[in-house]
Image 1 (cartoon, helix red, strand yellow):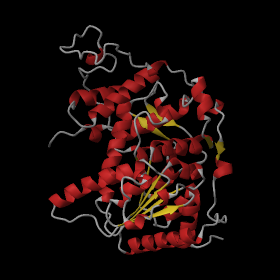
Image 2 (image 1 turned 90 degrees about the horizontal axis):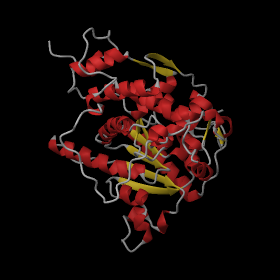
Image 3 (image 1 turned 180 degrees about the vertical axis):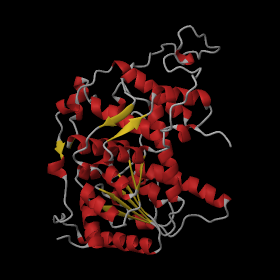
Image 4 (image 1 turned 30 degrees about the vertical axis):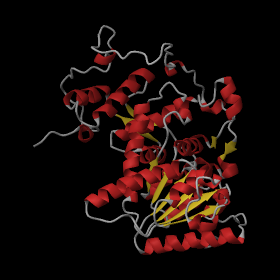
Length: 414
């Protein structure tokens, strides 16, 4: 029988042999070690990296949060905001496209920015997922931070200007600590960001293996792709006092979490962040490798969904940067593999882009404008207009869009 990899052993009984690899003194951090090569500074005035381990963090309960679950959460039964006739017609088109996609067995992918969650759409989106109208959700890092804070604290959002000036923006202990904890524990099962955090919220915490087990696994399988995840977790356990065993954390507002409900319903959730974009960078536990590993898994999963998008629907709601950038790279990767396997390009798909901006005054059904037109530089329109299929742009409030879409697909809840 062949060797079992790291992922297969995590959760099993601890290994009995002692590894040469020690979590207390990793060879690469031993002070006496002289490396054969040290890169020269790229500048005559080298600037040392900021030591984020010195960041002083405070309890999240001390933050003046600007939004509360009870104030923002919109029940599907509430009357939605009115739409102009032109926008209402496009919502009709989106609903018809989704019904057609489901009749073909094709997926509906929702890509959304954090404001859709902050505007209170969680219950509406959960209802759409529950009735099978959304098969995949994708958001950015900020979308997951608000998601977790609403689910755990019932509050989220802070004053950026005042807190940056005070050096306290984002320096909230529980947010950075628990998101890293969710991603590190999820990585041991090969989970990406969206599923790891959704599970963490829905299951009220996670379990961490014993230190000796992690060290033994890395020593036994140093070349396993999961070995770095074990190393990162082991280092965090030592440096930040993470105990092995169960970490219980009750989330009293699960209904406000899109990710938790996606996990509960079996809807794939992927997250596409930027390193340094989100407040969890403002924490001593910040680890770009942990974030990158989770995001890398999610990019692969998202590209896999795009590879099967024929006759499907993409809804890009309030995501001016992440959605178009991630989608175009995913579609290129999907085409690369499909062409190798003898298939043609993804076809028959429809894309509906929703944002508050006016679309540059350009009719995007006619293709993209010339570079001399300012509308050319609206990435969220231009990129999606290049992605095959058909693209329609709706200048609309994001909550109003999904609320009216819900009405078209499910009727008016009593």
